[in-house]
Image 1 (spheres, one colour):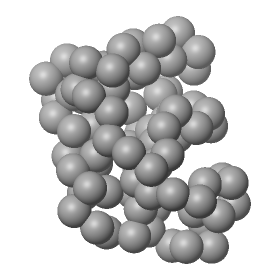
Image 2 (spheres, rainbow, N blue to C red; image 1 turned 30 degrees about the horizontal axis):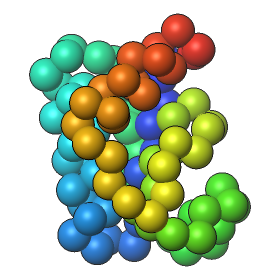
Image 3 (spheres, rainbow, N blue to C red; image 1 turned 90 degrees about the vertical axis):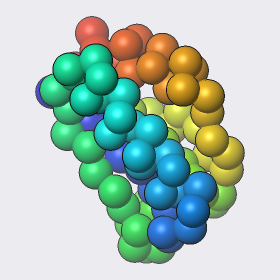
Image 4 (cartoon, helix red, strand yellow; image 1 turned 30 degrees about the vertical axis):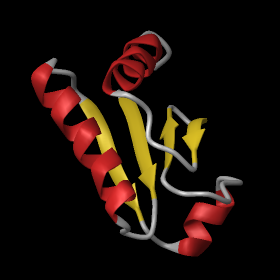
Length: 83
């Protein structure tokens, strides 16, 4: 199963990234384990220093900014085969 982790402390941009992931998964009917991680110690374990950050299948895709919806969809599709 595809694993997607959104890392952030709950700021508006972190929430927006989480919502973007939820919407894409629902729109495209993609089954994934979507997690929101807000604990600073857990976030630092990923080596991420800027949030929001997106981890797909244990790979940091972006940190410190929001991707476009099309970029996010491409990353999700690219990682569907790497489960």
